[in-house]
Image 1 (cartoon, rainbow, N blue to C red):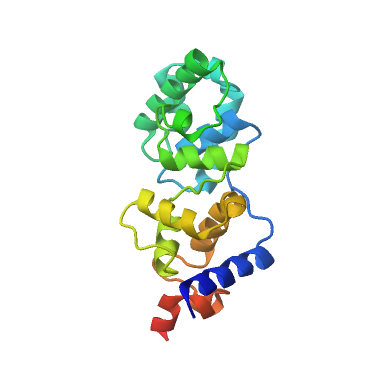
Image 2: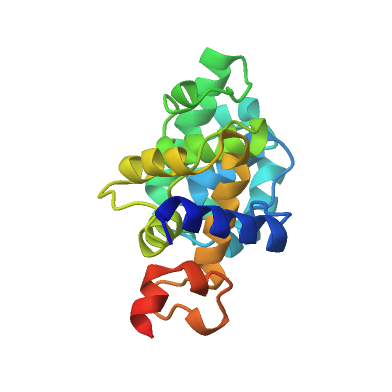
Length: 211
């Protein structure tokens, strides 16, 4: 089967089996999402969701967070990975939102990337989830699954992102981001992929090798 046909089959499977695919981070507005995504770097969504309610109670908007102290922020996120760096990033992000963007989370990836603690992955997550922009955030799950399915052989997240953009229709990129993340999180796991129960097994080059 040619790659184009194989990709089409995989996308069709996702459409039929995961018609609803969303972020597992808890948030109610763009500000809460960007905070949660910054906190989720090298940390599980589950742990982030345990801490964000108290954080948002103390800092309900970027204006209040911008006036916060490092010590206050650190106390609320100290059991999350890399709390010192994330505390600095959150404060810097909030201050830039207030000073440069009128307290509003920008829509464009290029503007989002200017914010402290916001790299391309975080920017793409916010742009796709909140504003339905046709971008794909490449985290470790997307990177791994894209290689296993031979969607990409890119050596960097940006190279993988560019390859995915060539394969996935513009209108499906936002949801495809979640399809691939969730598949990598629960089925195509890093150490022991569950190939035996994987719905994509028929079209996966690595599953064929495993057989």
